[in-house]
Length: 293
Length: 175
Image (cartoon, rainbow over all chains, first blue to last red; front, side, top):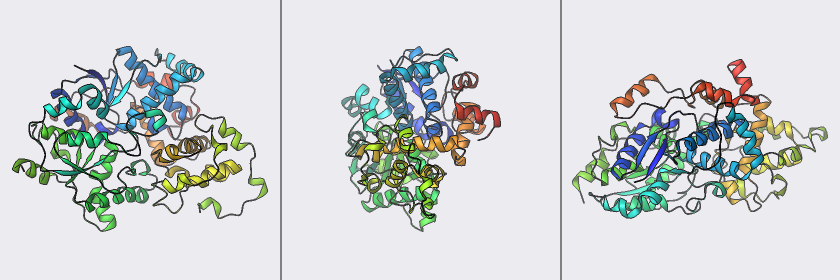
């Protein structure tokens, strides 16, 4: 049985509860034990644009706390996973920088050694649970569903620091989707960014990125879009109606968090998986699953 | 063309030392190796939908030492940090990181979009990048979720002491 310290991040408790609810349910069924962080601060990523040093300190604090707990970190957010992985690698390699950051941590009685590994949910599912175990837990194969995936950027990039999957042709999420029995369709610009980080700086440009993706997902008649990132989910689900209005188009594409899809296949109910928290109506998916093939 | 290009460039606009300053900073090390092939701009998902954001141009302006134009440019803040440019650069330039280095300098000089200020303030106040409404925190119970881990603001502030920009925010309550 694997055990992790759950690093929740900021976006998920702020507005993406369905992801947390479904991930916890699915991980519990798969025998993954989650321990709550004893204290929390942001991974640091949002501060990187204004102060790289502050980002390094914030990330290092979390890594140091995990080291003290003696547990590896599991995140649901690729932004958090990417930042914690990257900072751990940088500070392990660069002794002078590590010492500099540690003088800051010492002020708060912490120290970073670099001994803790961070994994995103997908990585833990593949490496710690294993595909065979996941498949063995599928009681309701979703063979009636044709979906598309949006992997997101920070789960794979920058590749030098992340070292997970192939950024130019990522396969993990597709493999995990296919494990549920659903068909995962290819579409144009599949690996491109959703635009979320540019929201607040220039909403129109940011939403155009998401619109481009949604229109390509629609083009292949995908019945749902599957995400593994809270920010990507906000772009496609929370903002879908806004995009429709802005560009006078209709998508109506339900956007599910991967653990919601997996949960359905494992026999959990839409209520247990917090389907009612989704902004875009996903009842078409529930109906298809209930009706079977 | 970025908005910074509307004015003619004059000889005294160039700061010949700027590129060396950037090259010494973490993430900016390979700036001088850029030979302006344009892979970054052609692969950039933001450049595709923006009339002004062009990573190659930002890199070139930085190499030329057009410090003020670069640091005051609005387009600097449009990068979505997807790192496609960094991963695909044939010269190994960490394009997105050079842009981050420039943003840090712009922030120190006082140019920061509101959204970044709000997140920085929220982190200093609660540990979280967003102000999570009480309603959300209470709703966790009905959703069957454990209570939210608390931010240790006092400890956080201790470890951030001496970080120039944050000392400034804390003192003023704003940037």
